[in-house]
Length: 278
Image (cartoon, rainbow, N blue to C red; front, top):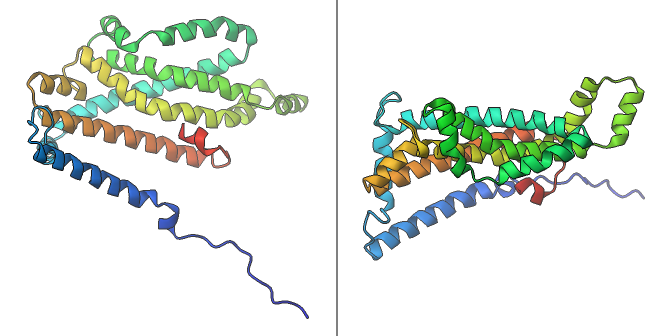
């Protein structure tokens, strides 16, 4: 007698069970803010050392209550900083990827170039920032160059690693089918390198904001970095925390956008969790 067929299709867990982090993360944030408020009230910490969360919230509301072209508000300065970071991120990443493929394509070029690249990366970018600002000016260009320099190295190294990760047999097979160098690059090397490139982009998306802020610390007439300097000098700590919150939120959104693009373009890449989180 035949046994009744059983449904062996795996059951799909509810969305909230699969993404429990969407529930836990806000709870953690609320708990941290509650502890922050309790500490400032219980120990009567002066506001010029650690302002209570309500003061920071009021500073955020006041900063965003003015128009985007008003230099007294956060919107104008945030637009300047994130525009500098975005353009510097694009240029630094593009140059890093292209130069990484060029360096990795030749053993001789790689052996000659890598020591100089590592030596340049070892230089502290905070120390280079004043020199770059002098060379390229105190305006928009200097901040973009500093951001490009900071975001360049992660993409260069990851592009080299991605190039070397390609199976040589696939390249040999493509050449045996009379594939051109451009076809090999576009159809084999670039897709195989995408997981490594996106790993570098995830790092560079956060470093880009750091580069823009460093450039504005050196000299700027606008931007969130300039606001931080002004608020620190006048001991307005609540607005300082408000600006830091904007920077943290901007970095999180930029990194989330890169990860979303990675899931879209690299859906086929099965990377281990530790590598993906790194």
